[in-house]
Length: 295
Image 1 (cartoon, helix red, strand yellow):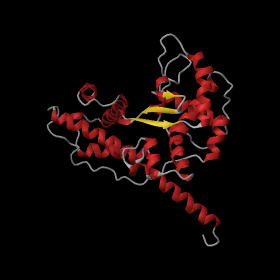
Image 2: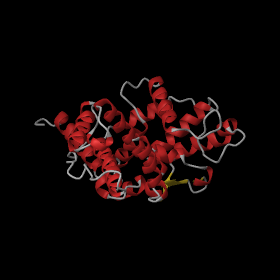
Image 3: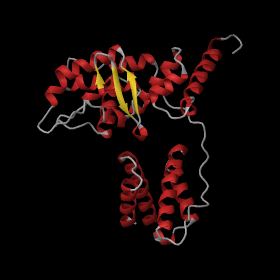
Image 4: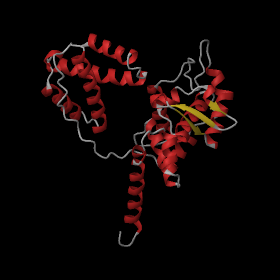
């Protein structure tokens, strides 16, 4: 399994030209599937529709969301299609695999006051880390960036005079996103006072750095947000993508056009952005039921 996994990842990189992030996502799925096969005492050659269905139930029992399960099934399908296509397996056992139905899953968001409390609780005068963390979270929220996008944001991506940041999104598509005043002030202070103290020999042009002068990782950003949320007294579970969801929801609540939100989020399809209209409708229904005499 491990040998075929490595060959397949090289195939995705060299022949399909898929991104490093996508390769990592596929690898995580296949490594999890390999562990399941080992627990099930099943070899790759003996894998059939029953094994794949059992793996799907295994993911469900772990509490995995349907959307994530669908992603893992897609990864397995392309893997088994490749195995069959290269002659490693006689046939593709995933052909008749029924994908889990996609239910409507509304994203979790923070209200505007909670986001403000979180951001303002970080002492920007604490240089370099408080300064860095404030700028980091301000930018994710102000620009609705994914974690992968903020990690890869470089000095040359930021236009201070025009207050725009050039974001490299999914599929290597570039978009320009305006930077709000609060985020702009925090970022400029970090670039002037915080980042120079984090630069080390060999440091590249990534904006946000660790104490060793390297680009922040996904996990480190999650840790920073968890620590800052705990220090701010937030009781709910907070993760980086919740700031992106909050960005879109707060824009919609304040009257922004859905197409503009789509463009700033970098969604290829407007239907992906429309999930936030469901959140807004849910909020309006809640207000109506609470305050209307016959609600």
